[in-house]
Image (tube, rainbow, N blue to C red; front, side, top):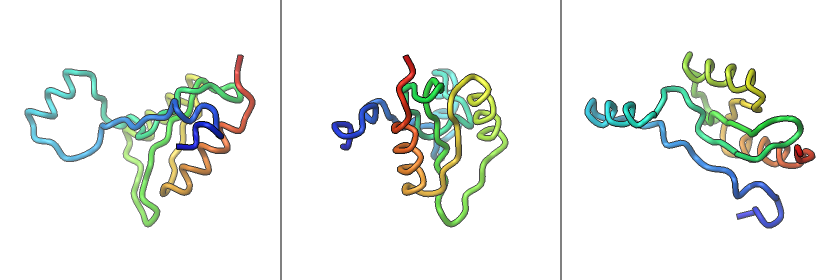
Length: 106
């Protein structure tokens, strides 16, 4: 982990919303607060005037943003987060590194 050289990286986590589920499991997760379209990665570290960074991760050779995902990205940006779509892990890594390189919000 690069958190020693990239402060704030230890505040990154994956939101386990994706994947195929049966109706019962889906209903249980919905009752627990799982919401369709929430971005895959969330970095709870304020930087550069943003409250945090949210990333919807798509594969390099395609992948499309669903209407629910686009809505979450738009709403998070409106609330002062930096929310974006990254295509592949290298794109996400570069986005995270650039975000964490900004000055910390006090």
